[in-house]
Length: 113
Image (cartoon, helix red, strand yellow):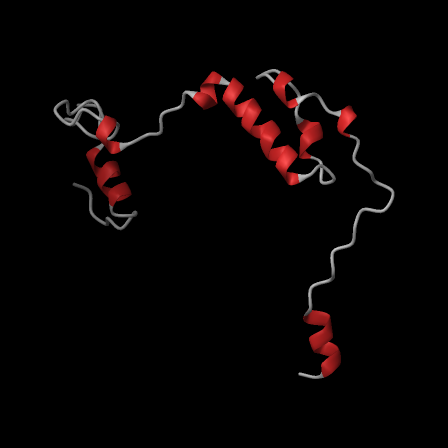
């Protein structure tokens, strides 16, 4: 590899945004952010990362759907009830056994059951 091709593989140095300045007064106060606040202004590239994270943290903390979410975990399932988990439990009369078997085998079934 010659010198000119090596030079082209180097990442370009980051250049600051020319003509763009950040005005913190153009954004709402972090303390006033609620679930209904439009925080798109905080997601712009010229906003410092720490301020963006603080706005996202405040928005997430104010939204009960995000704040109170409890992740899905296998220990939340009731293993004593076979119908408590999707995909488990007894077969139904309406279940198409050949189609289910073909799906389980990745479509590699040749003869009907």
